[in-house]
Image (tube, rainbow, N blue to C red):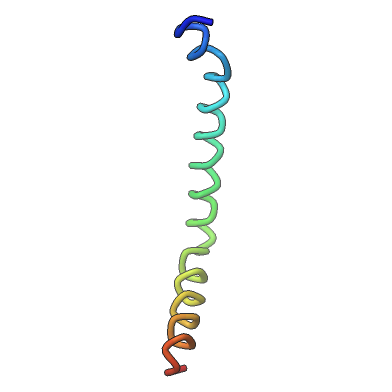
Length: 52
């Protein structure tokens, strides 16, 4: 198998997956999921330190 065949094989799948992943990140941002994740991360960090 030469180099050109190796890059052509499966190369088409990365673009739809990239588009899908960017779309899902945008959807999560619209739903303000990043704020939920940040809130949970702060809670976990404060519990580990022993403050909260």
